[in-house]
Amino acid sequence: MTPQAPPSRTPSGPSTLRAVATILAKDLRVELRTLQSIPAMVIFSTTIYVIFRFGLDRTRLEGGLAAGVLMVTILFAALLAINRLFVAEREQGGFEAIRLAPVDGTALFFAKAGALLAYLVALEVVAVPVFWLFFLGDASGLLPLVPVLLLLDVALAVTGALISPIATNSTARDLIGPLILLPLLVPPMIAASAAGERLLAAGGPTYERYGTWLGTLGLYDLIFLLIGWAVFDHLLED
Amino acid sequence: MGPRVVRNGPHWAERDQPVPAEAPFVASVHPVADHATDEASAPAEGDATPALALAGFSQAYGESWVLRELATELPAGRTLAVIGPNGAGKSTLLRVIATLLRPTAGAVSVFGCELPRQAWKLRGRIGYLGHAALLYRDLGAAENLRFHARLFGLPDDGAPRIEELLERVGLAHRVTTRVGEMSAGMIQRLAICRALLHQPELLILDEPLANLDPAGAESVAPLLGPAPGRSRILVTHDVAAALAGADRVLALDRDGGVAFDQEAARVDPERARAIYSEAPLSR
Image 1 (tube, rainbow over the protein chains, first blue to last red):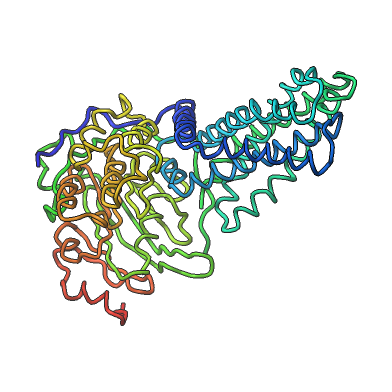
Image 2 (tube, each protein chain N blue to C red):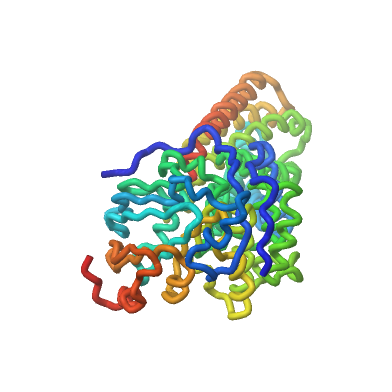
């Protein structure tokens, strides 16, 4: 066999942004190809609506109850995606492959958060209209609900991406993940539900403290993005 | 004594060392000398920095010690074969050297980078072929390699290199086949491509011919062999191959200690085979 000529230069690592794009594109390609997470999230959400509809014996929800049902459903659907995304990465050696490459480990954090965000947005494109069909007589509160949902999605995605490496390192990952994650998600859930309560009120949306709750969600997102940026590389270690 | 808890500096170092060409898997006891005329790509003989240096290195999983007081040194450009019975800690040793596990005690240095504190400097310089293929089941052969090529920053997303490697391991006709649909032998060949993609300075091979039939083993052997500028650490149960293809042999006993650590040319094959017997050798 003829020895290969040495290349002109040794490879150097890509920028963090390019590494994020590479990992995110891989995750989205795998999801589009296998449809493992998003359909499961949609089916799960619809099932929860059916349970609430018959459990509460109500065909119309408004105010805090409507917001609570919607936000809690999104939260639990997000847990499905978070677990699946990270367990698959660990089982297929993705964490190790990335630690061997000349890339900043935080690229994985931002990529996973981006993938979770994409999953949640895709879920809500279906789940929110279904929620409207199941429980709402008036759609006027849905448009101002979009920023609330987007900021909640970022909170779920960022916190999930931050906590999941800890959970997936554990043999009790199915238990540890939610146990750590759910308490951390109480603040954004309170903020999103409080904003949604007024937007889904019986007499139509009101905007009392709307900006405050959006600001609270945005601040939470920012804090957890910064925490993830600072510590995620260390969480990848065994 | 516990490990130092310092790791992952701000960024990885830019490299300017030459990248190896490739030669047969088991070809030469002194591969560096074989290619000494190629000054552009030969390892620096005068460079005293060893590829690997272990001193008093021990490794534990929880309360259980799997490696005890290892000490050895591998000059750059040479090959170290690690042999020993199942459970001796060979794969654990490789994972520590590959920066995937923190050393529990003692000193581990790779190309002068102290682990775990300077592990970040080694990112991109090591090619690791372990028991797990580190490939995504739902991506095709070329897609997997392209993903890794992008993470390693290869020019043109590694397209020419990927094409060449797939051709050489006999997977050129399987570029779009998903890993989940491949046989174990095909996955092993693809994993070898993944480990070699960025032409690493240190190649860490944990039973690289596992799952390969004779034809498959023959196709990958030239890729995995000694090459100028390449250091190798090889775990194998094939004692004859270890002695023929390595410069140094580190034999581990069942307790994770050093049974012997010698130049390959001076190892008695019978003694090497004896470490696989039930009774541990006296150290």
